[in-house]
Image (cartoon, rainbow, N blue to C red; front, side, top):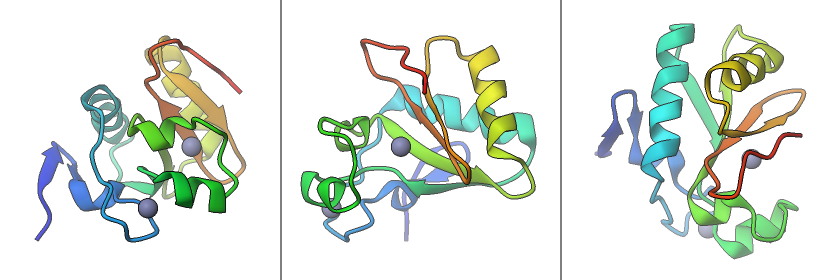
Length: 117
Ligand SMILES: [Zn+2]
Ligand SMILES: [Zn+2]
């Protein structure tokens, strides 16, 4: 059983991929993800949400990555180009921090943002 923590998301979707159980997610990040889900009208897959320090190092994440602070998610939407997700977020959430990648979009709600790459 997974606990629903946003309109369209369960806590388990954000759990650290290493299996450590770290699955706390920032509320502001969840609000943005719900908005993405509703705008595109398709399920949003979280490929990486929370990361413990050990897992973050293992996957080559940045030191002090927002993933380790429970404020970040890497997302994919089936049938929607990551560029389109990035561009919609950049237009509609000017304070969100965003990363553009070939196969996913990074979004976070760091307090000293926005960062864009
Ligand atoms: Zn972990
Ligand atoms: Zn990321």
